[in-house]
Figure 1 (cartoon, rainbow, N blue to C red):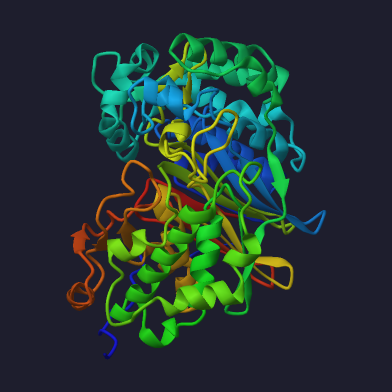
Figure 2: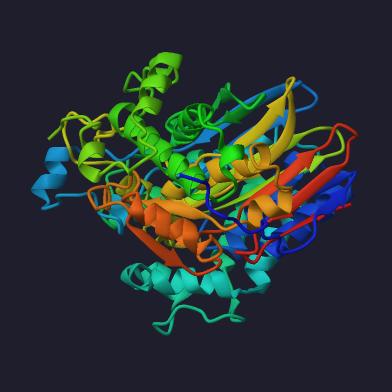
Length: 545
């Protein structure tokens, strides 16, 4: 079959260039405040803390102190990459206890859906690489929370979709829907309790969420609302600092976050795709999309078969990413037809979000790709009384109630995680910093962004703006048993859609920019110039100086 005829890659705006520092986020306000810190002499890690805490205020449906965070960083001072895992453990509840309460699946809302929040300790660890005092870094978030923030259309849409969860918790309702309706675009949202919590953190540090008064308030309220946390679980929490998971792709290293992150899926996809001449197929051609979708299925099957909390489950890293295993996975891809859901299920074990991200680089050579999330929009819908802190629903979205499954619920265990982030490096230095949030779509959109850069030669803005696809479902236990659907943005050629349907894909078209958002890419050129692009699907931007 000949490749489909394709149109030139779409580019929504021009590239952004800078030589001293650059930041790209999904919130214009966060981008401006983080850039201001860079211009004052802060480094990429100072800017990252500002971006993270400001988006807590400006994007309350997506991220909060009650969520999780992951990052891949490069410290120029240490000449070293780190992967940061900021996910917390689940509650002290068993599968049998959940079933006795009538649950067949984990609840996605309410106190029992909450996982211990890991994001604040990631922020704390970033302070070790930063320059400026915490009082300066938290000033913008405190100001916007106390004085109010004019909320944008994208965030309002997110909150409206989560309206039932918002209304279910009296503290969440009082904060975000006091009249029974979520905010409309342009509404001023005040988060004064959150401002007080940030001021407490200025005095006591981010660890107060675990060791101090904020931790006391969070646990007390969660237990009152039905959660099974113990105070000591919060005190014991710590971010994992590890070597990034690294695979070679087209002459580059792709560095990502290891399990429980889904960076394992991205790594597996890329290793499978190295055996296919994607550039020869053409960007968003039938053959390119088909090969990538089928690689996605094989990588997701591997994750669902083997992966869990690495402290509890032995994950055969070398086996999953070995040349033999990758060759076997690649051999299962039939370029003449799509894998069926029945064939996919045979690869699985036999057993009983919504997110935002950003990337920052500075003139010293520091780089950070950062992602944080409440899991679903508005997380669990639970706000810890008196703190303004919304709690995630990572336990509800992540664990399964199937005994023997590697991701089965167990007391004190971390769930497998949809969050991942990545940096492309060469000769031990970062070349591109990238990120794409979106639950189970993250390893799919991250794969597409990396292939856009390394296979198809798109520039940074084109890589973010180009039409996307996603294959549904993924690993989310709530939807994992649903039939496969391949959703294409309307910018993908119609001919590709027809031909993909002929190969057996159940194709659906979505709107031009309805295939997710918040993708950011910054290139670190060898001459020191920074080149950035960001996604037209969000309210964010990329700025540099």
